Length: 378
Image 1: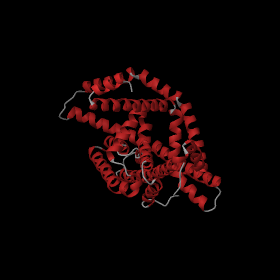
Image 2: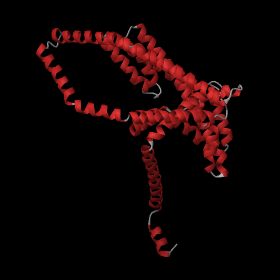
Image 3: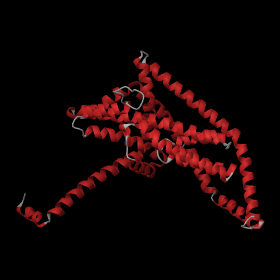
Image 4: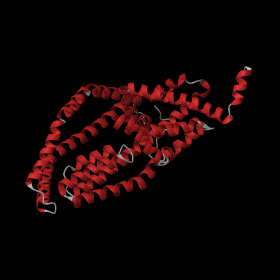
């Protein structure tokens, strides 16, 4: 080092030099993260279907492996599991839609009756409003809708324009699921060949551990969502709340976003109960949702998730918030599975004994869930 340069460095306080070194390194890391996020945003039409396909694969691959171990051809096992999944999903969706169509007139009638009762209370009750005031408020609401009609139409046209992207994404997702179920292990082994030979096995162990955690997360989330939907749907049906089954289906879908999903969709059930049945039934529905959430957080989550998928609640909330900010609902849906995968994969990557750590994580996974193939991976 030149003498002048050494003299200049000596003139700077050591703390400042260390801080500067940390800062430029952190800036490089931040720039790399921003470049990665930019690339993900540009390729989200491809990456989102692939990520969803990996989640569906994690849900279905244990069944395919079970059939494969019992002598069924791999291709036949994949076809049987996929067709069974399509049949179950299609049957449920058909039933839910038919229930929604049949229950909508009853809900409309009850909401109309509730609005009439509220209008009478506003006129005859403590507020003592006049018919003119109520009509004026209604006219203002209609005017607001008309003023925003152009925005609503633009949004509808935008949605229609993205229909082609949705169809393309669904087709890409289907093909990805088929190939991952059939030969995911070979695809993963091929991709990891770009890793230097000295660390290749460590990376493969990390991927296997991460995917095992993803299997546990998706399966446990599916069971938790099913229990949430059955509990809330049964309560709504007992109280004769309209659209009980469609609302339970929304709760099931919302439960795939941990912590907040089932609560948000459950609040929709509270609103429907309030409009259709009144305040008393709305409070009962709210109490039902709180009870189901307590059952989920204190019994189902600890019992089903296990050590391999254990993530601190604060990390889950922060991941969901970050995913929602970056990619909306899809980001909130995918953030926790990605976090579950990275949590186990990084633990194996930094472990002194990666193979042993991976086996320990998979043992913790299989101790609380149905036995899965130890080396299952994508």
